[in-house]
Each structure stands twice: as C-alpha cells, then as structure tokens.
Image 1 (cartoon, helix red, strand yellow):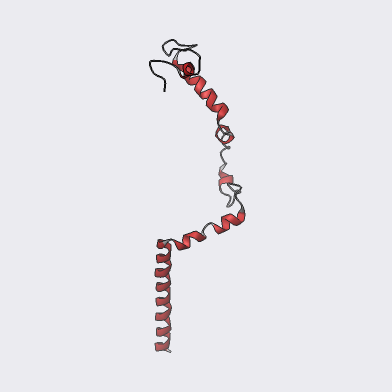
Image 2 (cartoon, rainbow, N blue to C red):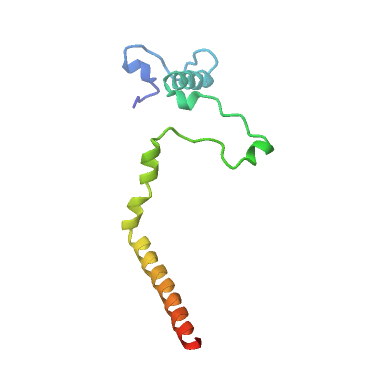
Length: 113
C-alpha cells in the first residue's frame, strides 16, 4: 500500500503525487478506476439487465430455463437431501402417522363390519 501521499503508479516507476490533481481532481482517479474495472470485468457483469416482463408475460406458467445446467444433473440434485438427518426424521414421522391412520381405519372397519 502506498504511503506518504504517493499514488500506486509511483511504485511502478511513474511519479505522481496524490496532492496534485491530474485533470479534474479526485474524480479523475475514480473515473480511471471505474474504466479499468469495466474493461476487466467478466461479460456477465457488464451486460445490460433483461427487459422487465409485461403483466401478461408474468402470468405464463413456464417462461424458460434460467441456466444451461445439464437436465439430468438437475434431476439428481434433490437426492442427497435424503441423507440429511432432518429429512430422515420427517420421513420417519410422516410414515408413522400415515401407518397409524391406516391401522385405525382397518381396526374401525373390522369393528363395524
């Protein structure tokens, strides 16, 4: 990091003083930084935002895929959740409740038949 009011370019051999403005004062430093960031940024950051969808377009049930990930990878993505303890517990509780409900129904059917 430059010290004593020196600009970073002084380290590389050029001598600039921060106290002497180049063209229009401190704004020129910000402008140079923003220009260099725009040139070096990946294309996804410099692209324009997509146009806003109309109301009728927002009513469509399907408006396309959001990314180009392989469809079969997308199908396999939920399966690792089955080994999560909370999901295992929820499956156990749900299965127990359904089994209990079926058992009560069978017992009541046998009693009233």
